[in-house]
Length: 362
Image 1: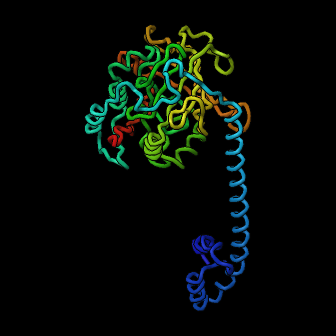
Image 2: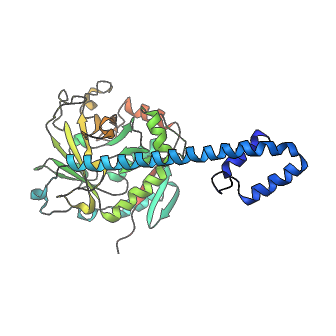
Image 3: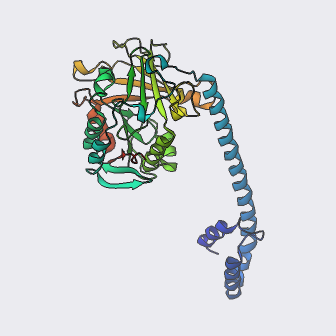
């Protein structure tokens, strides 16, 4: 029996008690009638299959136990480390959602959606592809809404690249959010044109600081899946809050930064409820402003680089490496070098996916 036949048989070894399914077994019996010497190969292969099945079952169980342990650890750690925020004094409400924004530019988003390449819709949500350079500029323009943009602190405006992130989310903005000066909190509702994703399919890996980890995520989930999943969050009206305070130290120190926006706790709020947090890894992230000495224009250096880290103090994810948010377009719409060029090299001609419009309100 050839090695190819052995590989074929191993695929069927777990489908029946007798190692092979009926169709395969009939085929083998026909072959052995023509060449009795092949009968000798059947018995060893049967033992091989039994061993293979036991090994597969063992590893499946081991992986399942690992996933359960990881999920349990993550749940416990997030609930231990999360702290509630309450910017209700400035908002006059306990919840904040997209419809609470002073302006929702649906018409502008629709117009920009029509300018995307190969636009499509799913469940009323609009998506499309756009070249990396143009996509960053479109993200800036779409999220720059008069009456909203100018109230966000200038240091936070622009377009940010998730440099070194193992996730297929590439760009994000803080432009379209509600700023509470009293609480030093920025509330960013789930909305179109606030983030963009890598458009490659499974196994299409970009360059990343954490290549093994990136390959794991990029193998099981694509940017397109994340984009549609993120849009679906708008059905639950999730809001993310960034509450700024003094730098607590630890990790990459943010004490050397000159900006007052040096540290932020990041919290996710399902249904926009600001008094509570959901089971979401975002709820345990923090941002630390660090010195961006590599930025060529001295006027752009301040508040151009954040370290984004996981705030868990227990469990296996407590040691997950942090990555950076690097500003590639500043508050005036100008590129920030060398981050913009590095971002373009990272994309290597791959387009972005953007969530470009929401379903019309009923």
